[in-house]
Amino acid sequence: MQGRPVISGRSGGRPGVVAALDIGSSKIACFIAKIEPGRMADGLHPVRVLGIGHQVSRGIRSGAVVNMDQAEEAIRIAVDAAERMAGITVKDVVVSVSCGELKSQTVAVKSGLAGEAVSDDDVQRLLAHARVHYKPDGRDVLHAIPVNYAVDGSRGVRAPQGMFGEQLGVEVHMVSATKGPLRNLALCIERCHLDIAGMAAAPYAAGLSSLVEDEKDLGVTLMEMGGGTTSIAVFFEGVMVYCDVIPIGGIHITNDIARGLSTPLAHAERMKTLYGSALASPSDERELIDVPQVGESESDGANHIPRSMLTGIIQPRLEETLELARDRLQASGFGRIAGRRVVLTGGAAQLNGARELAARILDKQVRVGHPLKVTGLAESTGGPAFSACAGLLTYSQVSPLDLVSGGEDPDPETSGGQLRRMGRWLKENF
Image 1 (spheres, rainbow, N blue to C red):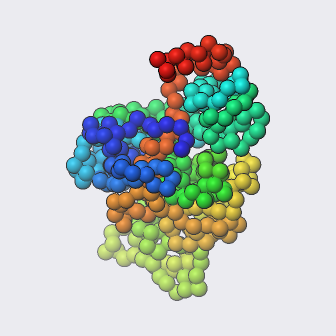
Image 2 (image 1 turned 90 degrees about the vertical axis):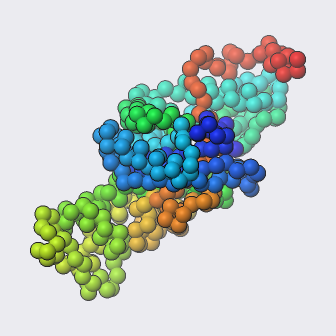
Image 3 (image 1 turned 60 degrees about the vertical axis):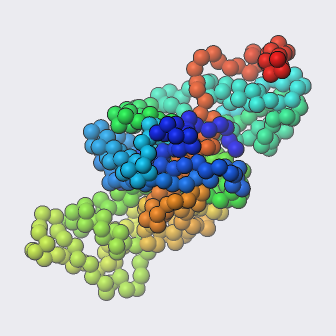
C-alpha cells in the first residue's frame, strides 16, 4: 500500500462510491463504481462498476483542453450517461492526466530518529517535507511516490514503520505537470459542477489496472497508446519509478491516412479500425479497399487502393512512436531496470500487428493489457482503451501521498526531538 486514499466515497452522498473520469484526445469515459467489502490478494477492496458512459472527445488535443465549451459538453454527456446507468448522481471525480508534459524526478530526503522506532508520523512528515521542498518552475506536483526507504543507510526497506535506527531516509518519485493545462482541465471539470477528488497520471492509472503484481515487482514498462499521446511508465519493486509522455498517438495515424489518401477523417478512422495493420501480409496487394474522396459524394464512386498502401502509411508512424519511446527509456537510465516485459494499453494498442511490431522494435516481450481488477465491465468497455479509466478506480484506494502542501514546513530536522515525541506520546495515551 502506497500512501493514503484520495477523498473518495462522497459521490452522490453514498459511502463507498467512486467516479472515474478519463479525459482523452479521442474519447471521454466515465465509470461509477462501488467499493465492495472484503480484501483481495493485493490488500485492496474489490471494485464493481455500476455505471459506464463514454463519448467522442471534443475540444481536447493531446490531453489538453483547447475548446472549453466543447470539452465541457462532452464531459457532461459522458458523466450523465454513467449516472443514468448507475442511478447515482456524482459530486466528485478522480481524473486522469496526460497533458502538461509529465516529468519525472527522484528526490532524496533524510531525517534523524534519535534511536527510536519509526512511526507513521515520521514517515508522513518526511514525505511531506520532500513534497514541500520540491518546487519545479511553472509545474504542479501530481504524485509523490515513495520508492525506496533507508534506515541508517541500509537501502531496500519497503515499510520502515517499527524499525529502530538513528536516521531515516527516503527516495521519492515526483511526477509533475505544467500548471496551465492542469488548471484549464480543472476549470473545465468545475464548469460541469463536479469537484476533483484526485488526479492521476494516465500511464500510472493504466498500470494499476492492467499489470499483475509479479510484473510490477520484477520490472515492466507500460505504454498507454492513446489518441493524442503515448505515455510511458516504468514499474519496479511494486511502484512506478519513471514516467514520460510522447505527443504522438492514434489520431496522428488517422491524420496521416486522411492526408495520404485524400479521404475524410471519419472514413480514415474507419479504414484504420477495419483494415489497418502495422505489419504487411502477402495478401495485401490483392485486397482492395474503397476510399471515398474528400468533397465527393459516395455516388460519384470511390477510389480503390490495395491494402498494402494503407499499411505503408500506418507502419512508419507507429515505428516512429515506438522508436521515440525506446530512445526516451534508454536516455532516462530506467531501461535496464524495466526488464524485458512491455504491456500495451490504450486504443491504439488494439491496432492489428501493434504488439508484434512493438516486440521487434523494443526487443522485449510484449502483451496487450486490459483492466484486471474491476468487475461489472461490459465486453466493449473491458479492453485496453479503458485501462486508464478503470485504473482510476484502483487509484482511489492507493493514492500515493497526495498530501496537502501548505501551512508550516514539516522540516524533519527541526521539528523532531524529544519534546515532539513526548507530546505525541501524551496525546496518544491520555
